[in-house]
Image (tube, rainbow, N blue to C red; front, side, top):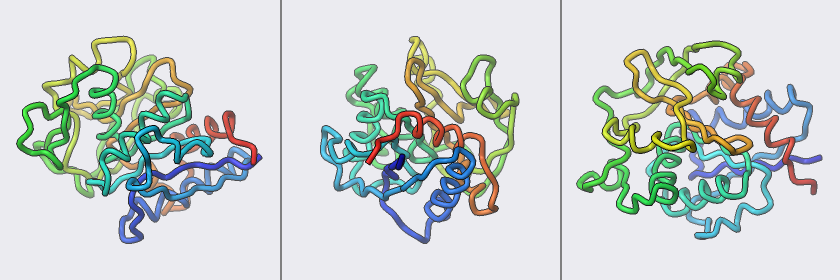
Length: 236
């Protein structure tokens, strides 16, 4: 079985996360025991229905936003969410997963991202009070969360490279229902990861677990993502 994973974003070898992701996936695929082919999919090539991604077993929305096409990134996330394909969104991927859910599930059609629409009235993603560019910190996984199971621990140290995150003013609205849930918070209580109930694997993290690949280390979250992809992998 060949497992094809779409890396949705605008590939740039100068971006640390973009260099790290293929390495992290190789390590995870070796652990899982599958043949994995990651393919970069530029956001500008993704149509509103996400049909460009039909041949992929899973979707990873990668860091380094703003994307060339916000609509393309959101379409990819919606495609993964609605078709049950395993999804991982890190950094910008986390931010856009929140934005996609707010718009298309909660019906907040005016929801915007402060990086691309700083003057918008409904900023679901806002600028962080303190920048997390090249910062590390402890994250804590709530009881019953998928990430607590994946990590096999109640907390972990993770690294960031971002200036934007979930606007705390929308937290209650986003997590009021049974769908989207908090998967991790930092020491200050701010949301740092999300997960979607009732989906085979749908996780977004503001931090970048892929960086473990540059150290030649396996990361439990990347391995869990690859395991989920392999279970639903496309046979070519």
